[in-house]
Image (cartoon, rainbow, N blue to C red; front, side, top):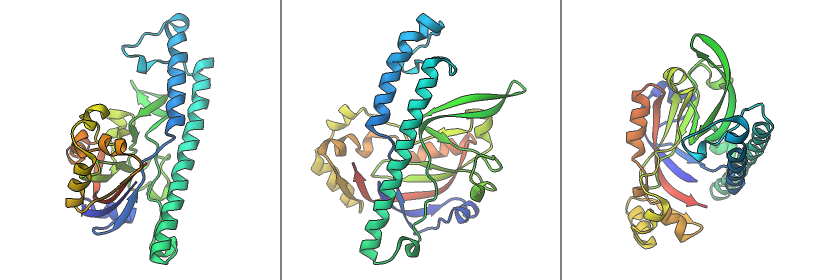
Length: 277
């Protein structure tokens, strides 16, 4: 979770629709079903690996792509388990949001409504959804499984909440705790190029183990402090795994996302308080 300040607006019209403005304090929460979802993934990779070739004659280049037909018993069971993880993740974020509001209310002595603490958008970045796309001139229903990706639907899509339907779906691309995160909006190119999807996050350049060997905890805390960023974490390991140097520069990533036409940048958010669970 980060408390951030919007330091740059790229699209005034859409920012206004989203209720965002320069200098605004915002809170970005990045959390899912954690160990529950990870366990479901591990369990069903084993299930799929057992039946994939033997039962369904499917071969894939990487075991992480292990799969079975959606209509099979294994595929159906996985979709149900994934739905449980998704429900857990949404509930988890709702509880964190509730506690964030309580904290702000306690400090500022005002209600969350008075402060203006509304949710811009809550979106999953590891989920499968049935959607319809034009493939080879024919409308086809497919199951789009987004892993480390989110929907980025353009204006007009019926799946977008009515309040945003005329501008497009909000897209959240978190960066690292030492630089920037971004709010974007879905663009037309996502339907043609990426099944209505965009990336979620900048992506790592260092493994967690390599990141842990680069700096001490005190060095990381001091470097962030010099940038005006306060850090709280549940463990020293979490701090070292999440050093800014472990990630690509999110600003470079979102410019590529915009350049290929799958999302447009709306705001740049600078972290001031970082809380790592």
